[in-house]
Image 1 (cartoon, one colour):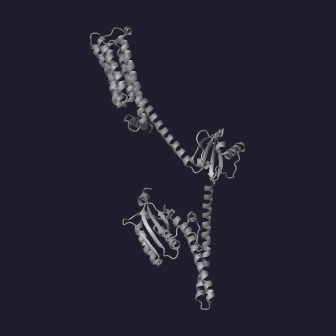
Image 2 (tube, rainbow, N blue to C red):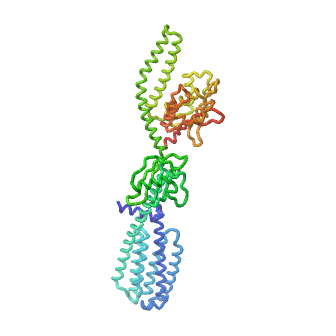
Image 3 (cartoon, rainbow, N blue to C red):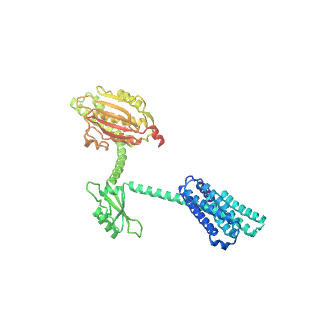
Length: 544
């Protein structure tokens, strides 16, 4: 499996596809190869045109040697400057063909330097095999061996004879093939390792960026403080909790003196203070926690927990516990409450009840009816089923809702209308739970959304946001809502009416949350009140 993976990586590199790091490595190797070719050409010119040539003996063809070495130097320099761009494989092939041709002619012209030239060609063949696929590398080695054999036969048939031992020729032939195979395998492993290292490095960089993003986006403030008390790192939450840190060198004593004192005490005795701390005016209190980055390191991680978040979590847990308890209590209250209501109705039918007592019976019946509403709301909240979303045409839904509501609740002089486009607007939502939420909103609008002495005018408006999200607005033309009331609308048991339960809007919002929708109060300029349910479209739900 490892061999197959290495071969695949090598093939991808030689095809110059998805590994820019591997392509850069090959380009660098080719650069040094062409630079070495210039050194070879210069060395041959030195042998031919300087007195050093006497050391290798009398040349067989001096004119041929001078022409070949000069042309080789010019060609080597040209390849060096033109090989910085373009396709690499053709450049390597052209270069090795040039090396083999020049080496063959130079050996023929300078028989005394044949062994040295053959040895230099050995490096050229190995370098070419390092940069080429195995079949082309072996082809270059075979070509070099055939060229040497051809030159040997040509000289053997001439008047001067072979001049070189046959064993030397055979050893160079085997060496060319061996060096081509070994360098090709070495190059393959080297480039595979470079590609793997580059990929692992990229993955490590990505993980580091992800970790940094996670820490930066954490709601818990995180500070890294060294042994001298200098703040080395700080995420966004900690900057907000500290009221800004500023630029340049920052010490914890300068930014938050009280926090620095607690850290100093923790360094001494290891005990943490559980009393919340306010680090800046008009900011929530935080509870600091400390942890050493390493066991033997003076650097300390400081975690700043927002106590308001902790309080909200505790409030949520308390509310959930209270909800379960209320549901259990509601079951126990429901039966005696039904008996009281039924007994009150029977007493009202009795002719022996005086008119003054009938007023008291009406009060009892009214309050038992109100208490029954509270019980129903609590039970509805406790036994709410999971949402079963489906494609719902909000335009059709709003029209059917208005017709059904008018039939069940006579509106008399009040108005309940639908404002929508003719084209369908589809949302992914549980129709039954949406019906329940809209019923609560319409009922509240009929009760609270009317001007004194005037009928209520309620409208259901179906439309889409700029981003295409389907929305359903329940709006009235009443006196509007004070800001202090609007901030507490969705709190459970909050009500401005002595007859209200304070659970209607809370239940409506919970139903919307169960359908991945939002319910919010939208201010209306000029008076009135609007509650908007923003849902997800069918396409967005499917893609999620």
